[in-house]
Image 1 (spheres, rainbow, N blue to C red):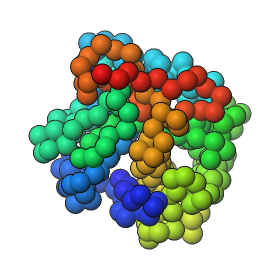
Image 2: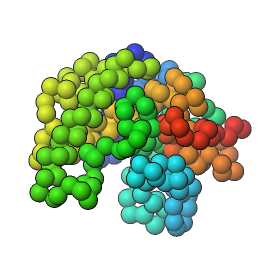
Image 3: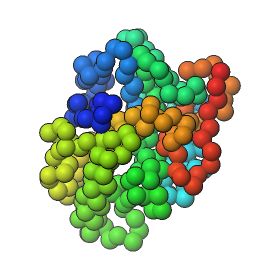
Length: 253
């Protein structure tokens, strides 16, 4: 979990376990007047089988980086994001599918996928090839993978440090937990490494939310926006817009 303000200062970051801890964290960090949360999990799942349209579109747009979204449907066993959406809506938050552009205020949340930011945001430098910090490519022997993965993760953190001068910025050094990404090398032990990877994803989600709020459709796109559902009900993913990609898509109602 990570929260940043309009100036890129990391005001809170860390880890939660389970729905109750996550709800408590959001309640503690939210600002009633205007808080936007990006969630790295499927939030609206209304298809009985197959993929959601936003997931198919994801693969079409980002497949050249060998990045795809897992298929989600009503038979999928893991739907923690759907439960989170239901609880948030009960507590005064509003799901925003992005089809009307960035929100203007209130407590709102949307779905995102941080890997689209890695390959779609030119500030991070992966517009030609995705980083290999998550999945082992065939060219890397299994015995070498942990060391290669840690080194690649360190390079990624270096790229993220460059967001300090981006618009909007992300200041990793502004919070003791995110500062550890800069001061400590990536661990090779699997559990410790996953802990770091989750924090990186959370910070990327927070920065993507800031990018959407600051630049809207000039820098982001809404995947799955072509459906006919009423405003605020479509299963969508708000993703970055690669410089050489197609025009951003959003339906306005």
